[in-house]
Length: 95
Length: 491
Image (cartoon, rainbow over all chains, first blue to last red; front, side):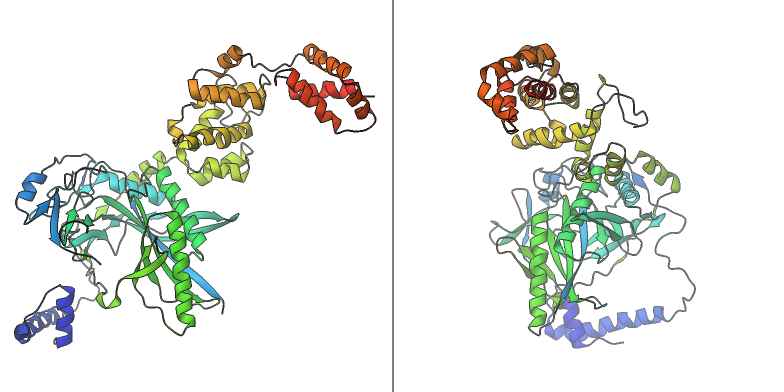
């Protein structure tokens, strides 16, 4: 499978990326290369094999419901690009 | 054409925990912005989530309360989307195997009981909050809410009207508060509903195209939003248009729904199992421990109030509207002066009349609480104090009317009913001799009315009751007074 221009445009929109039109062809061929790799993986016969997403025989560790964190806002916000009144400021997002 | 409405609800209930689902940060409401956002919550590189046991236990409790299957093994998944209130770039949720499967919630609408089937309930983390005002064209992000544990409860497309959807939401709201997994505070966003609404010609099997209405945070708005959306979809189809699947937002000021995201930008969440979290394993012993600690559920309690205590379905429903109210009622029945009838097994045992208790709880006490905007658990009259009063109504010491005066005194000044009755001289006159004296005097003073009554004008009887009551300062035992009046007035 290879990527069309409209596929590329849609991916860019979903990823919130503004693409340089001049780089479009190069990007398309790189992404198509990734898709070929996936195709190779998909060619493996997995009939009758249970999906394995996580280590078998291990289970989630649970912690007790206790507050163990203190307020470290000043530390965290020291490295933030922009803050005001304790809020992180980001480019305006309104749906 | 006749149209049928089809509704399914998704409810995000904030679970009542001290700390977040995957971090040890506090979940308390109202803190300074970002003061409760830990390194995990703001997704600093290298951090790992560690699951909160209490959140899992709440999910088990819910599953048992709705008769669902609690999954022995469930999986956390990443739901990918890009938005600044979610700094990881994905929300940890459950997708293929949720913790709770199936179950049902019973609702009563206009006297008809129905069972609304649940599809699933899954654990997930809440996102932060975006503030869009006053930041010179930028948005402000508060991540205190990020990582708050949620149980998302999803129904089948089982409801057929806005009223039914609201009845379900109310029943669910009562249940999650009853079993103690959610504080139910809708203003603070602890209980948020999204409604999937579609219409189809009545009799058609296939569902119509649905729209999702987001963030219905009051029952009243939910009803209005669904009603608007149904009207919009029907009008659209009847004009020859087609409904487009989309997410819409309800605007309460304009009473309308508006598109929120267009289909073109339909999200592909690319769910996949979260490699940071192993499968959640819940063994049978844990489930049984939770089951053993589960309180009697509201439906079962309302049934018992009807069958054992003889309350009406209406009273039983009102009293089981909240667990504190039901607990108050049960405490009221346990008056030590009379013994208790909790089991209902000894019909001879003395007990407070449950109907009397129900009337006072739903009447006088509810009105007083409402007047001062108090919850029943903060009532100024304890169940012990109120039952001390009700005992005196039941044994005839005071009339129901006088009791209201005692109630006011208890509410305002506290104390014990018996002491107030003595201090104010409110004891009912149940002494035949004293009552006969009053009646004799009335007959002597009102010869005209006596003659009228004896000639068949029954209505005059009320005149004598009124006068006798007045003469006794409202303290005459009404039943005895009636008997004596009837006897003495007889021709």
